[in-house]
Length: 326
Length: 261
Image (cartoon, rainbow over all chains, first blue to last red; front, side):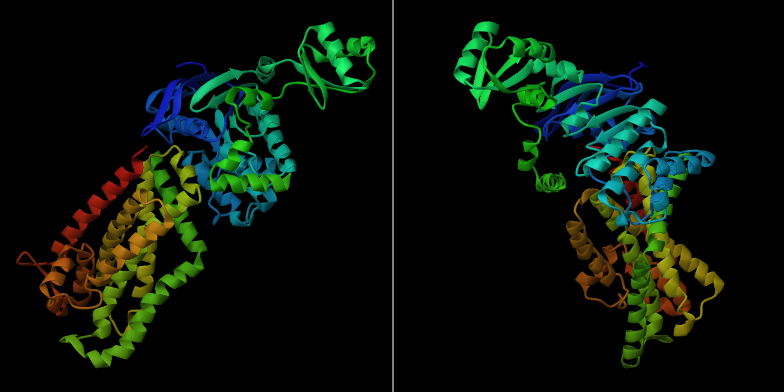
């Protein structure tokens, strides 16, 4: 027994010759929101599938709340909730029936069952739709119902595999409110994969996986600090002279593209003095912190979003769906 | 106990889905009934009697019940493939109930649905002039259940291995029709050419359909008995064959369902 919500040690999963997960180790503390990022095919879903007992690891160990995912499958399954990338509802049944099915296979006591179902359905604002067949639901409603279902049996760890993929911004915002509110109320540990960097930013810690290997793991701000300092872009009346002045004064490299940009450590504190003392007339100035997108690009050599387009047809459709919703 | 509840809820969902799907229910009994009525009245006179006291309808009726049960239960596999395609299978597979339980619940669900449809056909017996005693009906139900659970398990076994809906449907057609045709549903199997007679005897469905006819026709069924390895198969002989086949199928289905990558 240990007190980690999720613990993974030297996890390896091979499919024939393909090594999908290659000696991955990490742990997640109870109550943590843990972001798992990586391009498609990096091994995110394979790792989740091992953690939720859908796949057996080739070697290495993984446990949820101290229960081994191979030896104590039943306890592991009882302690986790899942919201999958692809819908996994019974569309021919209504919302209530889907949740009742779930409550029963998770052995929830009868007196608790109906109360908790109502609570969850109200939380995701589907109580009024409880008697409608799921196939009449929109994509966002289905995802909300899945979230309600994943949380129904009060799991210790909730796995969210791209929980907001293909949803409109408003629904995404709502889903995040439910998720974060839940952590506050029930202390649920959240294990999340996402393509949206602004969502990954909400995580307490982030692990980046590429080609089956863990390439970085830290708090989002530390990861961002790792890739570089803040970026200042200025436009001036005379860029050539300004560039010379910057190099001379701050001993830093400048990049000349559409204006001048250069890196400094603490952008906010740097700017007032810079503007006051600078000799060339400044037309405009901007400060940008490195984003998780930059981290991702630096570590994997790819942009997280463009990856999808080249992937399967399905992913292409999703990407398309998302673009049109933006 | 937990596992029993698990099997029950898997079973219950299948029943619920079936109940919601009225079209499927009606469709599934319309075809065999149409068959009985149209062919019964159209061909009966022309074909005369199959054996003393056994006209076309009387001969066909147990066969059609067998066919309905067989086809319905076998197509349980479709449900599994469907669940996989639409993602619901994942919800079932990560639930804290064993895969063996899931397979069992599925097999029982398909058997129940097949039984319901068989019983609907059975209800038409009086209209077709077939009198059945309560004892006969009970015996028929037991035989129908045996056939249903065996074929249902076979369908589930196949579904654990065949991943796409299209492939499953193709395999189903490939297996189902020969199994139905060569089980004595449509014709007496006693006087067939050698190669066909061999196929009939290795077809497990034969041992599900033959006893149905033997029970329903009683003494008049003598003409339709089959002989395997020099032994005229009694009802119990056929039931034993079917039970062994069914047990093998359900164990294989459970094993295959529980197998993890």
